Image: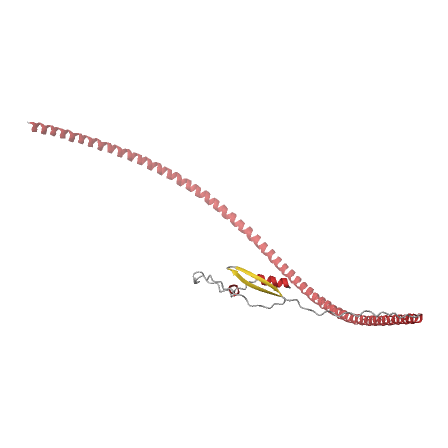
Length: 292
């Protein structure tokens, strides 16, 4: 206890700066810059009465502290009372007294044994009574539980039989419905099958007729193609003869035009030579006349 108090007193500071509450955090730009106080604000603390010690703090130099631990005066406790010494029996004990004491001790021992036997018999009776009550409760619980289970089983069997009977009736109704549905579906299938067979027969008959008509049309078309080919061959032959005649006529006209153009060119060249000769003749005469 003394060591703990000394440690706490030494670890804490008694200056007013440390004991003062911390100011709220302020932003550096908003905080006012005050004058730095170099004077210490510590004072000698008052005397405090502790349980067993007293710690005093004194600041001798700036930044240096001195602690004094003063121990209190020890408490004076009263001396415990002394126990009385056992009496010294210096009397002489006779044999009769010893026998009486032994007899009394034997009686006490027998009485204790009888008490133990009575207590044990009472405990055994209690245990037997408890076991008997437990057996009775167990038998009652078994009988009640058996009756409840038998009643529950009878109820469950009755419900099960009713459920099975209801399920059988439902299954019978379902089987009857399924049988009716099967018969109706078979009848519908037979009707659809007969309708399909009739439709297939009519379709095959119509297909045969269509094939015959198609073959007849193809045969007529082939004959028409042969006739068209023959007429086209005749037309091509006539066209070839016509084209050949036109080519011969065009060749003849071209030769006639070439002959006419040659004649015209020949007359034009002669006239041009005559004009050129006359031009040079008159030019020489004009030059001779000018020279004179």
